[in-house]
Length: 412
Image 1 (spheres, one colour):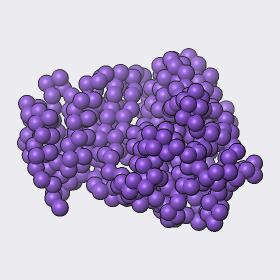
Image 2 (cartoon, helix red, strand yellow):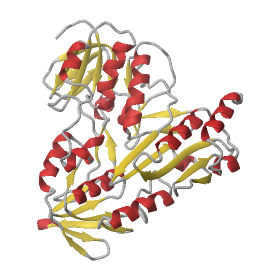
Image 3 (cartoon, rainbow, N blue to C red):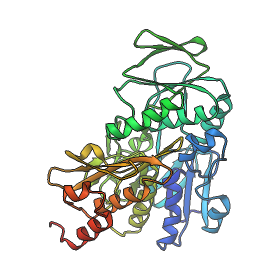
Image 4 (cartoon, rainbow, N blue to C red):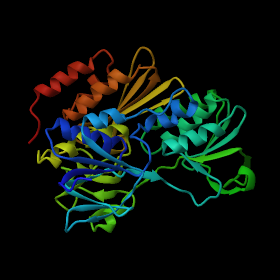
């Protein structure tokens, strides 16, 4: 291994793998080392709960081995990073190796939140998806704990494989963390049409032997497979052991708007960190787009570009024939405007107290909502303050509102 100081990236997921290529695109010609704890090449996580789980596709690489070689990236796979020697600017690996760094990027991601229950499976890695797929046989009784994105995608995939699925969600409705209630209701109806037994306002008290779920209502469910999708916890052990500032257990490594940690030579990006956003304050996001966008910002700032991260959050989920998309953060809004198209698709826009557009959410079949949500994302990025009546009127083109927003000077 070279002793020349390199740009070193810890974490070979979406964010870390993208970052090494962004470094090359941004002009770094020196050594780059990518360290991944899994003994596989970087892969996309979104397909794991969808096409990989149904068996319709194999895991999808972020970039394959040939691309890493062509970019002259040294990939260290199957070895975890155990410590950071900040005095010597060296990353210490679990096998004792030391990698000198010029700058270090932590893209350590997050791990599935674990429940204090025996006999529960989780879906976070490629290995998890492949092992779970083997158990989702036609007729299998599957209990899914959690009615968020991962839980519902699991339910849809298990249903597609011919399983009998029950979703147990402790909150009063599905998708309570990130999606307006009316949008979540459309998704809930689609699951019920597919035969999923959706139980909201219900918790799991225990998992007995042989997959018997004991619910807080006193009922029991006989399951062949029990899988939980109840969020993720940022991976902060490496940063914490190195003495870097941690926001808290839930929010991860604390970075500034350039994605710098409390050590100027160490940056953090993706699921593992919280960062200040000009519209939403300090946030932590678990999303493919955020991982990708953070990789771009982090790579440039590792090379002293000094650029703030201002990208608008964007999320999506595919379930059955439905595509759900959200731009911005609906929870940040204080009022809502609904635009209903002639085909029945509704886009729900969230506005701040001053009228600034902060979010848009919609669900429809195929690509029905993609264009509207993309334009809404651009309006949010432009700090638009659209007239609510125009925003609600489907005859007023969103492109026209975007042109108007771009021609209006933004407040200082």
